[in-house]
Length: 318
Image (tube, rainbow, N blue to C red; front, top):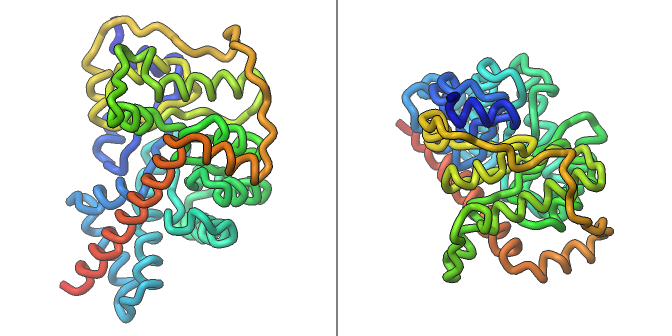
């Protein structure tokens, strides 16, 4: 029998959740996603030393202030993304600075800067997804960017309210998180008996059903997995972005992998949500898990962005 990874690819587009070129070469995913944490990790790999040397030389030769460091980090993310675009047939997600998560206009401006840098490097915008946190401000930024022909990946998504607002905004893709939802419940003493009872799996399954029932075109890409059981329970989802370690596990397992989600399934009836800003914020206020994990995720990405800036500054000081 084929490996579970091969079986999964027959029903779901598999995306690599990494900036590691070697891992992408090995698993040949359709797309690849990055974030500040993954770029920070990738920047410490030997294969990126030359790229970092080039970025530091061009951006930090005479300036080391905050704006120059931020610009250098964006240049590095684009440089790594460009390398990845040569290995995947689909798209690469590059994330806007998490510190802009509550500033619609600044998010739009940085997204345009990222696209311009890619285009200067010979990568067309149809190979890109601009990754933005699923705050109200981020979702409004995505709505404007999509109208301008810049496709977006709304990330740090933990609730149906976020998913509904993203779909209404016309986002190309959302990344609802699985493992971080599970983490929140486990920390409070609620461990599921199996993957079907996993609250992260249930959340993504509900979002998938909501989108298909109401005919939204936005792609559902499950993310943030803790084990292959969660992945197996979402087999058939539009896309799944998976870390190299879990891709390895799936590739080594030749057990049967049944399809769990399908666009033509008989979904339970889910009322369509009508969310203006106040209704969205109230829905988030009523969902402690989504509120806490969204804020925590933004803080973590912002912290790693700061670490990356420090790394580049120290690199330039050597």
